[in-house]
Image (cartoon, rainbow, N blue to C red; front, side, top):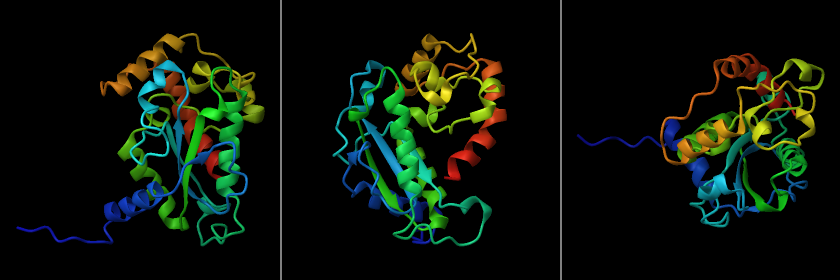
Amino acid sequence: MSVVYNPLDKINLARSIELELLRRSAIPLAETSTIKGAGVYVIYYTGSFGPYAPTTTPGPTDPVARPIYIGKAIPKGGRKGGLSTDVSALGSALASRLRDHAASIDECQNLDLADFHVRYLVVDDIWIPLGENMLIERFKPVWNRAIDGFGNKDPGKRRKTQITSPWDVLHPGRKAAINTTPNPELTVELLLRRIEDHFAERPLTKLPKSVEKAQAEQQAEAEEAADEI
């Protein structure tokens, strides 16, 4: 029996977002201040940090390149419901989000901002989460799946009660991580094993239960802060 194609099926809608985004040119992550609107984006890495070698070939100009991170920029107030006009030419959600990412990378000690590029797509509000989910499932970026914390917002007054994220353990120096609480069980060696597992498509080495618990407690708050630019 033939399967009837439904162009409005959520998978097909998400796929259309992916295809449109991959037709866009990649630009340096350091040069995103003039972007207008809200939407989805994919970040590529071409540097010399050895564990990330599988992401560096082919380069970011190739649509089959493997992103290191995928994210979304929701219009201001987008999580509160209603229709927003922030995805218009006047919106700044994408520029603000990508500026935060560029600052995080620029502050850390073992990555170079010049090695990062981004593709982005301005998307109507209601399709942004769908597009992000599809892209993450398609590419399985290492910073989304194995090394958590890159997309976290500055915890501000909560720093002393927030554990240092896996991303900040592996890439120290970010100002937002200053005065967070290190967990002695969360080591660079453990995180490097998780990266190896990820690229080998093996089950990931487990994080310590104390880390998993803390991440679960912080996740909802971090996502809320990340989306409300």
